Image (cartoon, rainbow, N blue to C red; front, side, top):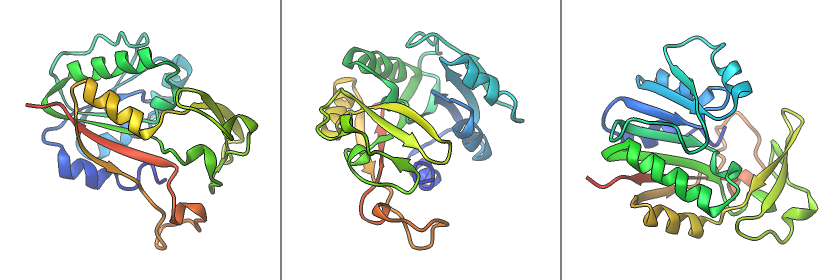
Length: 212
């Protein structure tokens, strides 16, 4: 919920144009989110099982299976690239560099890249829907694999830990301008009874621009 709640207002603030790419679309939640905002959406992922679930949903979205960091995207084509929680699946610095290069090349000059990813606090706090009580999280370092459990899906998975300051440097080295770094906290009027989320956030949303 917190990874999506503020996206519409952030997109409205920064994005000009209606051509969007959902980079790492998974089961298509973010793809349909963009389509509902009026974007012409292309959606890519490297996992065929995820895309199989995504295409079952209705909507005029171009879903496409790609090879990692070889998506054959149109150059200078997109006004917006949205990448929801893909960085937590990236395992090496070289892969981050390849992904950011691919995203930079695909954006039009002045285009916006939004990366929603794990905050520095994700693996160190208790959350309403995420269990982080695993031994490898205690003294985790940048670039190491942590462990989480999604309570609403009863699913355990690895979550690679990339420090916020490190990512900011990587974005800059890739040529992006950092417009803002948004940390969505829980609100009393949200449809959930938050705990830690009222003071800390599991997610951070980086709003980036390819210079004109």
